[in-house]
Amino acid sequence: MSFGRRSVFGGQSGGGGTPMVALNLTALMDILSNLLFFLLAAYAAQATEVEDKSELRLPVSTSQVRLQLQLTISITKTAIQVADVQVARVVKGLLADPVDEEGRIPALYAKLTSIKGNRSQSAPDPEASGILLLADQDTDSDVVTKVLKTAGYAGFVNVRFGVIAQ
Image (cartoon, rainbow, N blue to C red):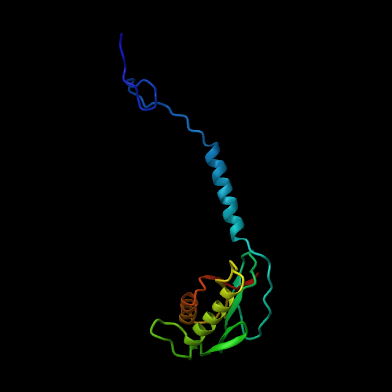
């Protein structure tokens, strides 16, 4: 009587070949399809129209995702505005106001922290830490970087860029 070695898969080893293992992928495909659905649904947003500003030319995009109404920061050729209130000046595409040691724009930081403080006292809103950034298509990237850094320091970590749909 011969006792062969048992393989880790429960079959007899010693035949020289690799044992065949059946893998049921149905459950894995269900999980992946659900995950894909929820990821796609999370990126979809409500339709929102932004009012036209004559001095602001937004870049063009072919994206079909619409914007949600959030706190709006606009960077035009002459100013940086928070909710249509000027907080800093832009001259020839460059920031005219000085920045602090951390690279923040002081007037913008003060305005954003004030808004953040007012929002935290009211009912908590999941979109309270988000902003909509409307930057002129000719804006220097250094100005956009300073605005993003200032918003991050103020606690506004979710940023969406506004563009014109084609």
